[in-house]
Each structure stands twice: as structure tokens, then as C-alpha cells.
Image (cartoon, rainbow, N blue to C red):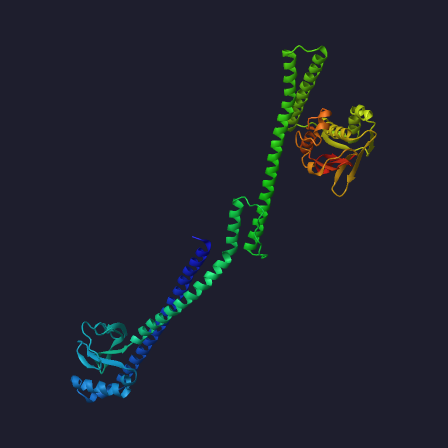
Length: 481
């Protein structure tokens, strides 16, 4: 069942229970009050008749009390004199203690057992409601003593109007109930549809998303209620899902590029080795071709060895425990410079270092591998008679020590900047292969930075140069002298 239908039905059921329950209670309360009023009025009339009888009981001295006809006449005089029956239609009955009728002005004869007569007692008023000819009658009876003689006095009245009024109230209430139910049904239908309309939209959008349409969004109602918050959170969720999917696509593409590159890096030297080895085995070649073939086989074998050792190093870096030490960053840069001095001298590259002495807590071996790979890439990308600038300073805004290594080399195209950290990715494959590169240098740098919580950022412009920025976090491993 749809949600709007649940709201609609539950609201109607709740209304029927509360409204009808309250109406029944109210009608029954009104009926009870009317009935009590009728009983009190009847009791009041009984007391008045009884009082008149007592006040006129001295007349019994002048009549023969044993004569039922005299008693009847005497009662008729009292009743007519009091005018009880003429105005309010009360009935009066008088019986002897033997339950023999003396006088009665009942307009309808009552058949069967008369409990109101049988239960009449002295000093106690008995009250009974009976149905006579499908009409309700109320009876009040008691024993009265007149001149040392007991009689049973019964006063009754037709109270059918009380029950008729209750029936009429129920009929009126049913009409009102029906009208209210129609109005409420129309109102709740409109309200439930309006309340659940945003949920219907959310459901429609979720179906489209399930089909792969991650670019659609829910139009937010700009309200601060639960629905508005749900719409906002739903859009946030889709943003996160879309970003995660894009990231997964990128990782999947990166993984595929890694597999393709690794396959190429392995297949190329193996093909060369097999080709030259078959040439040596199957043909009679000159000494020069033999030596050249052996040189190619040796070169490609060393390339495979380098590839294997580099991949092994990249794997071990993720698993080995770091050996953190207090290392002077400037001294480490100078050590790397001395290692690469031969390459810089060959291209007449000048290295400018502008930084103060600073100590950091880090694995010295990993730090020098990181710096070596970055500086070696700068040397390879730089032209002859160029320069490389290394600048270090403390950034108070970010609370980090910034190390910038900048060259004026060939640069990296913008479309390649987000891929240069992937394993085997080469911007200029011809130049990289010429320099015996395998495209794992920056990937190793990225892994070292991740392990040591170093922020790595690369900025580059084609034919202008490349700047590599390393940010060392003070809170975790940075110490000042």
C-alpha cells in the first residue's frame, strides 16, 4: 500500500474512532442527564402527592375507611384538587397492603406482574422503568400510613420522550458524522497527496539513479521541515555516490593503465631478448652483430631487473615498519645533490638551495629516495645550461613547512597532471625510454608521501617548467630546533 494511502486511511480510522466515540459518550451523557431530570421530577411529584394526602388525612375521620369506594372518592378529590394529572400527565395509583386496587387513573392497563407494587415499602421509595406498549414508563412507589392504616401509593409517568430524544440525537449525529467524514476524506486526500508528493519525487529520482543516471538531482523545496532536510541529504548522498563512482572509474582506469603499462614494459624487453637470442642461435652472424645483439640482450635484461627491483621496493615500502629519526632536511638535500652531481654537470645545470636548517622526524632512507626521484626528474626535464631552485620556508597560515623544487624544463601538459603519479605513466614515452626510465619514479614518491603523511602537489606549465611542493605537517612529525 502506498504511503499516501496509509496516511489517508489511518487518519479516517482515527477520526471515526475519536469522533464517533466522543459523540456516543456525549449523547449518552445527555440522555443520562435527561433521564435523571425526569426521575427527579417524578420523585418530586410523588412527594407532593404524598404531602397532600397527609395534609388531608383528617378527612378520613369523617368517612368510612373500610369502604373502598369512600377511599377512592377521597383520593380523587385530593388528586383533582392538586391538579397533578391534568397538566403534566402523571398517573396515580393507590393499593391496599394486599395489593388490591383502590383507585387508579392509568390510561393503559398493565398486564403481568407489577413489580412496582410488590416492591413498595414503608419509608423507602422504589423506582422502576418499564416498557408498556413499546413506550418507556417510570414508576415511583412507597407505603404511606394514613390514620394508622397503610396503603401503597404509586406515581408514574410516560418518559418515552427521553429515549426518543436519544434516538433523534443519534440520527442527527450520524448525519453530521457522514458529512464530516466526506469533508475529512477530501481534505485528507489532498493533504496526504501533498505531503507525500516530495517522497514520490524522491522515489522517481531514485529509480533513475538505479538506472545509472547519477547527474539528476531532487529539486529542493527550500523548507526547514523533515522533508526539506531529507531532500537536501538525498542530494548530498547522490553527490557522494557520484564522486565515489567517478573515483572508482578513475581507479579502474588507472588499474587498467597499470596492467597495460606493466604488460608493455615486460613484453617489450622480452620480445627483444627472444628476437636477438634467436638471431644468435639460428644464424651465422658477424662478430659486430653478435656483440651488438648481446648488448641489446644485456640492456633489456637489466631493464627487467630494474623493473622487478623497483616494483619490489614499491611493495615493501607499504609493508615495512618505518625507522623514524631526527633528520636535517637541508643536509638530506645536499646528500642527494652530491649523488646527482654527475648528471647536473653533464647538462651544466645549476642547483640553488634557499632554506634554513630544519629538522624533521622521518625515515631518512625514504626521504632521500623521495628527493632523489623528484630532483632526477627535474634534471631529465631540464635543458642544458638551465637551473633548479629549491626553496624552503615555514607557512604560519597552514602550520606546515613548505619545500618547493622548481625547474625550467619541458613541463607537463594539463591533461597529464592528474596521471603522472600513476605507476608506469610516462608523459613523453620516447624521452623517458631514452633515459632508461620505467615510469615508476613519481609513483614511488606518491607512496612515500602517503606513508609519511606528506602533502604532495605538482604544478606545471608546458615549455615553462614544473614545481613540486612538499608540505611537512608540524602536528604529527615536525620539530623546530
